[in-house]
Image 1 (cartoon, protein in one colour):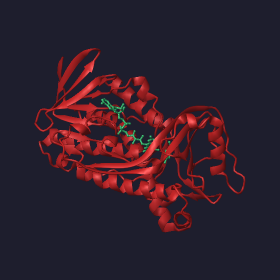
Image 2 (spheres, protein in one colour):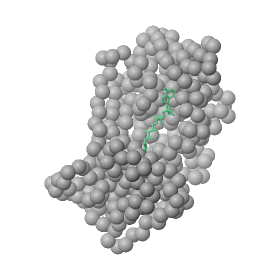
Image 3 (cartoon, helix red, strand yellow):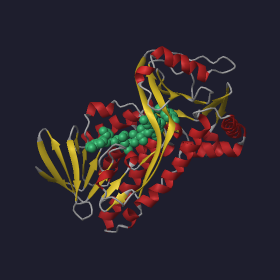
Image 4 (spheres, protein in one colour):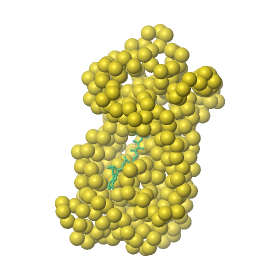
Length: 393
Ligand code: FAD
Ligand code: PHB
């Protein structure tokens, strides 16, 4: 089968779905092809913190009805170390900006619903997606669906297929520079059917490793433990997880962690990764396909949204005026934000995690940094400004 569209989007994660949505508002036609099922992508538990700019964009583009009803607006976070909690008043320090707790899979559900309601093309469970002609003016994608092959000719291809996707690999050897760093730890995350034990997120540094108390709703908690890379979920029965969380999150004044049934459990590697540039010919990479940040800064999903916001505007300008100025500047525009987020996420990670081997010197530095943030207005302001997110370009 043969088809045509203006923009072919690979991947129905936040980047691909948001791009399709923004292009649709500009009257630009697209197809989204996704290799997983709708059910799968709508239930993949990942991020939970939306920056102010992400929320504003969802509101401005008409996909925030449920977000505004169910999202939990937070004005602060807690840093906990040496058994004492220190609240960072994000909104006071960052000009009134805040974060909203709303699961990534809820964003994905809302964007898929909007796309289907608008009658726009989205294909799930496609196989063997291939790109061709990206160096020319009329690229195409090809994929298999229900045993038949489809080729879609287009003007642009957006590689929104995540870190393990195939789009990045279509760029000829020698074009991309890769920058990466694997942290010597991973995160074990659980979703639990229990009311959160704290009203705001708690980032805890402990001699046994980092722990994070987050949430999804008034009845669902999300918690993370630093674990060794290569850890299997089966190494951590539920009781062991709760016990460890209790130790790492304990305070001197007897804070109590509520436990409950574990609904979901996964292990995620912590890594930093960037490719430069994020484009080649008519192929543009966005989101995790181009960069990964360690989850400590809660930036990955928000960076994906920022990328496609820049890309949608650049593509719209091309159709409107024929000028490729914004498209040519796409990588440079995005990479500034990407590297700032990378720096911030590394700063948060280095401050809060236990590194392998005992290193009393590093321990002291970590505590000094935490104290600077907890008691010094300048350091706190810098953290707050980065955490709530920079305005979109
Ligand atoms: P993805 O969400 O990975 O989407 C890519 C899509 O492409 C997927 O649906 C995939 O199935 C599809 N795909 C892949 N290969 C192909 C192919 N060959 N053909 C077709 N489709 C394909 N970020 C935050 O901002 N805040 C947080 O609090 C946060 N917490 C996190 C916690 C954890 C445990 C993890 C793992 C991540 C967290 N992140 C967080 C990061 C965030 O989840 C990612 O940055 C985000 O998912 C990136 O979106 P994306 O659309 O670029 O990629
Ligand atoms: C989450 O709620 O999943 C979450 C919160 C903060 C982070 C990472 C993940 O830094």
